[in-house]
Amino acid sequence: MSSAASLSVRLDPETLHPALWLGHQFGRTGADAVATGFPALDSELPGGGWPRRALSECLLAHPGIGEVRLLAPAIVAAQRADRLAMLLDPPADLCAQALGALGIDASQLLVITAGSGQAGGDSLWALEQALKSGHVGVVVAWLPPRTPAERMRRLQLAASRHDGAAFVLREPAAADRPSPAPLRVMLEPGGADLLRLRVLKRRGPPLESPLQLELQAVLSESARRRAEVGAGRVPRSLRPATFVDLARA
Image (cartoon, rainbow, N blue to C red; front, side, top):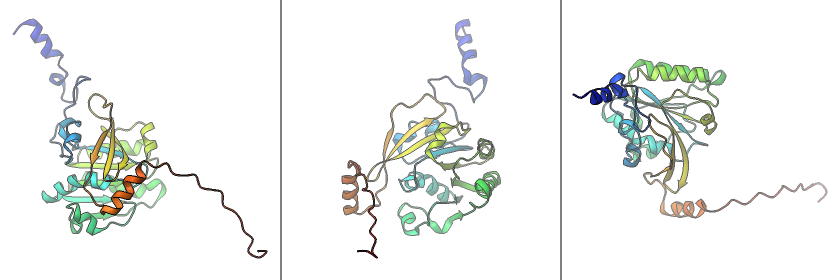
């Protein structure tokens, strides 16, 4: 081997440590990724899917824009592998029929509502213990607003011992605060059964353009047409309320 080639090998970050990579490369995850179910998204994630042994942050303004449909393939994959799927503090009651349409066995879901205590302390403690347990195949947790950075570091450390995908759903303002999660994505509605996804952070070069993902349809045809019409409509400002004194009318 020539001295130039030898120098090239020595300077390759991956030969020094698997956690190192060049800026134009994807970082190696060290474990098989969990397929997202969306080939366009898989191609933009290091390892070709959701990372194992790490947190994946999904930021969204409000629930119900398609986040469950986005994560459904990962939940289904865990259940098919006879691994437990856990949902922590979902913001609304779950519909077994809707979950079943996505392939999720609702009878095999562990749903925990623990969001009591200051700043969601009970919820964060339950999530940390679940990640450390090694008994859960996939975790989806809705975190309380403004979760402290120190708690996020503890969750990421716990996730490093979790052999599966771990998703935390947070408010969009969290994007302005640092996070130890190696993957952060912003979710935005893109229309009827469409989700716009922006990769804010990944182990690799930045992704300049958002991805448009087509979700499994759950709307009726008439509801879909209404959503398509409303997607491009600018909402009108509400008029000020007028007080009417009925006693003098």
